[in-house]
Amino acid sequence: MPARFERLPPDAATMLERSRGVFFARWEELLRLRRVVITTSDPDDIHDLRVASRRFRAALELFYPFDPKSSKAKLRKSVRSLTRILGGLRNIDEALLFFQARVSSSEPGDSRICQILSEQRSRELRRIIKAIKAFDHHDLDQTVREMVAGLNQKQIERRNRFSLLAYFSEVSIKLYLPIHSSGALAIVPDHQKPRHALRIAIKKWRYFLEIMAQVLDRDYGQILELLREHQSLLGRMNDLVVFGELFRNLDLPRNEQIELTDLLKKEEELLLENFRELVLHKPVNYTFLI
Image (cartoon, rainbow, N blue to C red; front, side, top):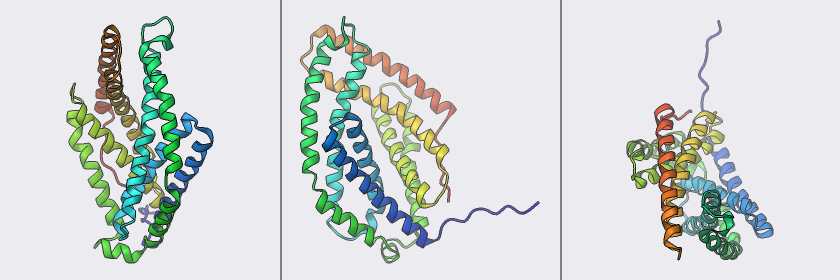
């Protein structure tokens, strides 16, 4: 039988070229969706823009150390602010879906909380469109182009004493460590902070591995699917925390406050049990294919 050879990682020049391509492609996708949202104001497009902003931020953070220009700080701050602004509408929409399906009213939309959230949604949508139009994409585009051009072997050598591949490996380990450290506490009832930290850590590692799949030309499909599964459950539990904050700040009848609190508690218990089963049977273990 012929000998089996391990597949070698790409050379440095190929990794750099692919890194520049991924970085700029994610920026272009953000700009494309920004234009779409201004035209449509569609909730799905707004959600897609929010995801695109997060995926671009993952690439920005990965390659951030290799650009010496101070203007990149404005880029980081502006895109983070965009992500945060887009999240308000998403939270309201998810809360509406949740409460409309569960509140005890003759008509789901007749409940006080659904009425208030619907009114908030209209105001939030106007705020989002205003913020998106004000997003300084022209100047930021120039910064991105300069960062892409500056992502070269000379900068790699100046900012990192190891190879680009060694840098990727180091980043991967750093991103995985919070997942390892938060895992045990995340399955304990009433431990919302560790679950929130775990969700963020899983999301960041997932976005990183998506980049690596393109840069290294490796199949991360299995681990990415597992991370999506964990992130989805953790995200639904985090939504319950957000929903609680939303209705506790509203002027609702006491009986509705009690009903909603009970709804969230029961849903959290169910999701936590599902998450425990997921962690038991399908844990997230470290992997980094090179």
